[in-house]
Amino acid sequence: MDRVLALGLSAGLLIITAVEGGWLLPPLALSVLGFVGLYWWRGMAPAQLVAMLGRGARQSFGVLSILLLIGGLTAAWMAAGTVATLVYYGLQLIQPRLFILSAFVLTGAVSILIGTSFGTVGTIGLALMIMARGGGVSPPWVAGAIIAGAYVGDRCSPLSSSAYLVATLTETNLYANLRVMATTAMVPWLLSAGIYLVASWQHPLVVGDQGFWTDIPTAFSLHWVTLLPAVLIFGLVALRVPVKLTLLLSLGLASGIAIGWQGYSPRQLGSFLIFGFELGSSTELADILRGGGIWPMAKVGLLVMVSTALAGLLAETETLSALQNWLKTLRPGRPLLVGTLATSLASAAYGCTQTMAILLTYQLTQPSYRQAHLSAQRQAIDLENTAVVLSPLIPWNIAGLIPATLLMVNAEFIPFAVYLYLLPLWELGCRPQRLRLLSPATQANQPDLVRPAKP
Image 1 (cartoon, rainbow, N blue to C red):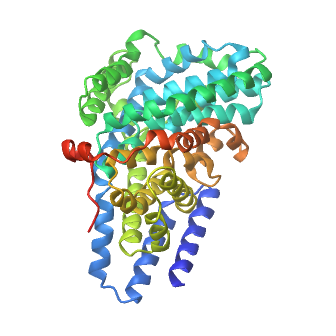
Image 2: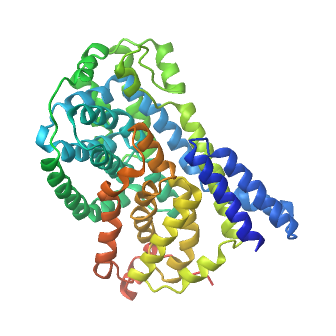
């Protein structure tokens, strides 16, 4: 009973903080202290509890350096004009009667290029929403298409911190995961595009004076050179260059373009890399093209580290043992996927962040996947198709709350973010054909694909 009360209080603190737009680190830290105090009172040694927290936190170490690199890279791309060029030419490709479809496709493309849903929504997504409001298009439809598109790349971009976190937790190869994720997303993406096409015909854009994008050429020197950091990323990914080296090389190239082409001083660039890019003017464009930075991402990294520590403590103390025991009874195939989906929804609602949803779902479902002798990649793909895309559908989870706030809408976008729930629904429908227990011959020939069941 005391554990149920502790979980309830912790969930309440997190939900209230998320809804009010506060930083989730304090309630997460209080939750950690609360559970440590609870289990100390129950008789566990402080050293044992600290060791549990440490083992949980260690799962985040591999992704922290990636998070910091992504923060610096985002700021460098903005300073180099890479993001501005993508926004400027992307917006000019839009046909008024295909506006909602274009919003989905463009945000998906940009999110794959820059790997961040928040960055995508805050740049091209915000620009599209401004156009929609000025052109009489339904805001919920546009917001749903933008947020759904933003999570296309958040799920399967080589620059995505969530994709890297899943690969790190499951000890799988990021690039191999990305190939499978692209395959499983193909039909849901096409179905979503079809729905947005019909919605576009019903809600066309009324073309008016969209003057904000005319400020882009005056603020940046637009040229094919500014796209080179994005081209380099995908060239190195195709060559399977290690992720950290890929990010560093693109960051270095973008930094050189920011100084040599856009005219920023090394001191200005250093400030951008650390604190985030600021255009330094009071125009409407300055509110759109801003963000990135190592320091803001360090705050995210700290949140990830505390989240992993809490998830590790909850797992090792079997705080959620009832849920874990239920998961162990599920057969491989559709039943286990349903259990993973339900667990991810509960974790996203409790943890209020996509990171916490991934971590708790992984911790709780891992014994079931091991027991079923399923590959580590099978669990990684299931996490991507549940926890990653369902988190934005929880109204108080910051995965959806922050993009909605940036777009000046509320939870009304959720029914229209069709890709985010078509993906798990498609997996549920296709699971009998998609998932097979590995055959004895496959297990013998490829033992690295199989995780042994725990004794």
